[in-house]
Every structure is written in C-alpha cells, then in structure tokens.
Image (cartoon, rainbow, N blue to C red):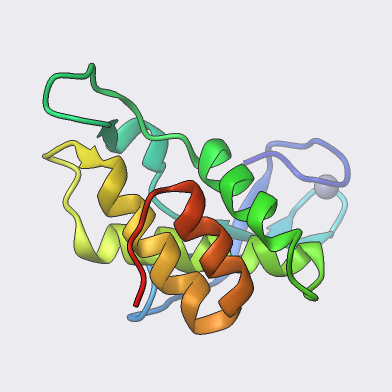
Length: 140
Ligand SMILES: [Zn+2]
C-alpha cells in the first residue's frame, strides 16, 4: 500500500490486530520514506463475493453495499440520531450478513431486509417501522 502522506510504496505493517468478533483486521502501517504512520482496516470485499436475487426467477446481481447504505440512511432520516449513526448501523448489518450467510448462495433481498429490520428495531423503533413499511416486512 502506498503512503497516505507522500505516496511512497515503501510502507510496512508495524502492528496488526484481528478481532474474533468481526471480519475486520486493524493495521498500523509505517512509511519508511516520510516516517508517517497510519491505520488501515481490512475486510472481505462483499461486492465481489456475494450476489443477490429478489426472487428465484429474477437475475442474480452483485451485492451492493451502496444500495444497502442508502436504504439505511433514508429511514434513519426519521430518527433523532446523527447521519454518522447510519454508517455504524451499516457496519453492523454487514457483519450480520457475513456471519449468517456464506457467499456460495445468492442472498435473497428478503433475508437482507430482515437483518436490516432486526438491527434497526434494536436501535430505533421509528426507523425500523418505516423500514418495515418500505420493505413489506410484517411487524407485531
Ligand atoms: Zn510517506
């Protein structure tokens, strides 16, 4: 990886920590050229690993983290939380998707929606109700 400060390719990992609860690996890199240290985060590239289908007859498309982010951001507009909260909710949803589904089978949009709804419900009831309405999820 090139240095974020000077662009030199002479960077090395100086510290690395995996997390058993997450698919992310935290790393500190150090640049031999300008002596800058910076943090990186490594995780699987879901868009190249997972596919999604809306039904058995519909075409399979690549998983879109962007569409997932927008769907969460749109309903979080109804909450009192800051927009940054949507980013952390997105990370939680992605972790759950990877923990529960292997990339060998296409994900159904219903399975993704259920995970988003469950995550929102635990965090913001209004946003989860709006999401349920938009994605035709039955609630109690
Ligand atoms: Zn540098």
